[in-house]
Length: 261
Length: 266
Image 1: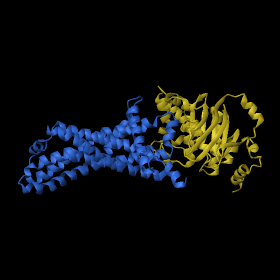
Image 2 (image 1 turned 180 degrees about the vertical axis):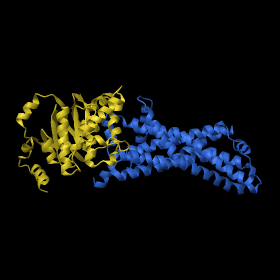
Image 3 (image 1 turned 180 degrees about the horizontal axis):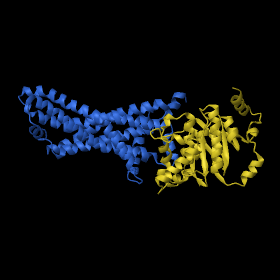
Image 4 (image 1 turned 60 degrees about the vertical axis):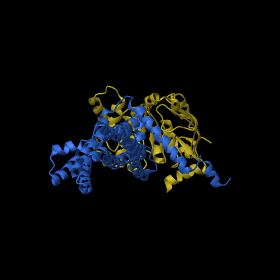
């Protein structure tokens, strides 16, 4: 059974849908990862997708961003069916999507500044170096790492790399941000700071976000709505308390292991 | 049907043969994509120049050393055979033909296979497994154009230049050896060395080195771009890049020589 947060759902119904997924299936050889996913993300909403490692959470956002193709189903982002777009249309759509990778995926042959400039220089026509420098300074200040511009990614800690990854994501001012395990591999304090940063970004940019995680603290702190992905399907949906107010052993087990062990 | 028959049924012929043909098909698609992307704007001039620097300048010291030693050693090894016939005066001519036509393109491409091909395979492989290539793609940047086209162009431009440089250094080594033992003057050495080398020979050398350069770039990029299975995969990509490039270089060498040799005879 899927629980809905009725107030929020009613509220969401009045908001524009930015991502809509219907009947999504994806398999890898004999492994059925996604088995009929239906989902909507509304404008300005932070949705957390919770699930165990290997449950297909990352596959879901890779399909949304067009990095992977679904076996079956319709994925619409900002009203456009992702897997029917031409190359040019997909590039235009991707300019409106930000993606934070699990291990930040910073370009290790470039400095922090070059990492941030890279998407701007290649995607924004007629932008001056002065405007680029200003944008870089702004996003670095937004993530609290203004003094790291000339450092190489390998010189940064895991938490700092995540922050720079977020800076690179928001520099293009995306309408949708996809976070893949934003707190994985970080200590609790740094995770706490990253959660705050995600909320701050959402508050300032009004972007809609999907946050993929198995970290319940991250889910509780950042999610307006939480979806629980088990066996390729969303089995629970609602706010944090509602999702875990269940007798479903698979969901209860997930909660217990996160907080007890 | 038992499990083995089920596994067999998955493959058209057998797993290794199927994989070989799938590999050939995939690399052909990769080459076609290169030619499609190379002429389409935007052009990454700056990145091409940067890659040319990496391929060219950074291989220079190794090529200088190897070509110089090869020139001296080849001349020294050839001397006794010619001396038996009292024909040591043919040494410049022999080394000229051997270095310009055969040794310079082969030595240069084999060094670049080891140094550049493996580096490209490992670099792109590492970018692939750490999702940097995906990050480029979702940032609306064409990773194929930025990473593959620029590197293949750089190797295709630079290997012929390095080959000419390698021939020059090899001949310098040979001259020093000949001059040291036979007191041959530089003018006489140059005259004799280039006596049997015409435009066709130089064209053949350049065509081969362009092909070798393209092979080094495209194989390194293909292996890097298709890396999987983490850091182990990166090592495999670097290693198999070198092995495949060397194998293809010798095949290409044989095909071009067989094509050009009849032209010299005419």
